[in-house]
Length: 387
Image 1 (cartoon, one colour):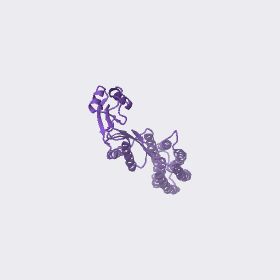
Image 2: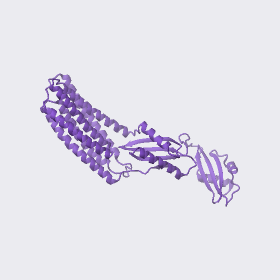
Image 3: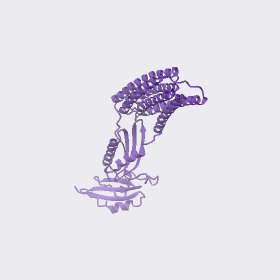
Image 4: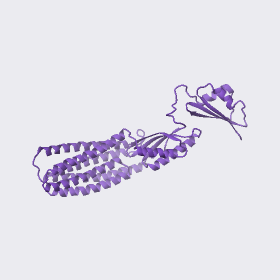
């Protein structure tokens, strides 16, 4: 028995609100990044600070990342459709991968250029005091946009927006490095400016690698952490009616989690009771992890990994079993009920008779004799229900 839990897709109005919130904060950040980039590149060039120039280029990469976020958020916040029944969140993952790749490329180019300058032994100029002003403005404004963007990203559950917020904070970190290196250069350690440029480039590479690697892990369906998986297994095992959990698979799609769970229950329970047990597991797991989008649970009467269904002999269907009984014992009473249990590659029968319609030929012994030579036969129980 396999049942998907009710999909908790966000309603279209909610998706529209999320797109609007993401676009608004991203546009604000983009204009701020462009303004800071111009100030820092011009200021660094005029007042002899290579570190500030690199920091300005870092700000321009923020502008590029903001464009990526705007485009991707518009696509990834579209609701599910026939071709994408789980939604479009993986587009957000691709956008994060692209953003990380851009950061790595820019950071590597800047680091290489400034390492060559440091090794060349060329005379380096002392940065002017306006560099300190530009760096201080950058620190304050980028810390503010980081906090604003991260708040919105958490609220709408967007890894891409949160990643973009951290990109903004790296700009603030790099501006702090500019402040320190400029003060050092003014005190006579002129080489600190170029070293700071290399450090800032390294920060850009590090953040880019983190975004890229996390996106790759998601695209290849990397599961939840061992700790979270163990927690979900314990939740299932502690649910009344669950005898074992022999498989739990997970994967991520954007900020959301998708789960496949195999639950072992008592073999004699009804289909509806098995489904109810599964729904209790679903509710408990959703309470533990709020970003679970969908849980597909499979109800097993036994561990089907331990007892795989063989190709030969094929286990008979209900109609075939009934035909075997009727050929040997005659027509079954009209009010009789046949229940089959497929366990350990055998078929176990329960035959329910009504005492108002007796069938003396149907006993445990007679049915067992009729079916004993069949390799699929496991056991039989004949019940007579009193009215």
